[in-house]
Image 1 (tube, one colour):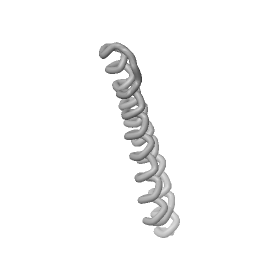
Image 2 (cartoon, helix red, strand yellow):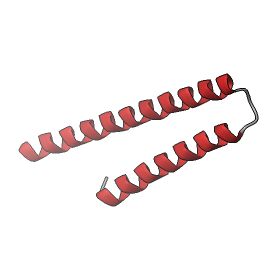
Image 3 (spheres, one colour):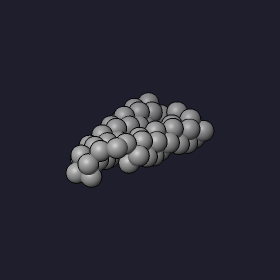
Length: 69
């Protein structure tokens, strides 16, 4: 993936995360319920970013191995 695609995906992920959190904050629920939803969303986004990083690292490793041969 080139740098432009990476920036686009990072911006998309950030926008989705911010939109989700704002939607949860504006929903008419108890504070404890809202907190649980935000916590869950943050954990999901963090896991998605870790997965993305792992896949990117695997891809770069494969490219490096091919270039070394």
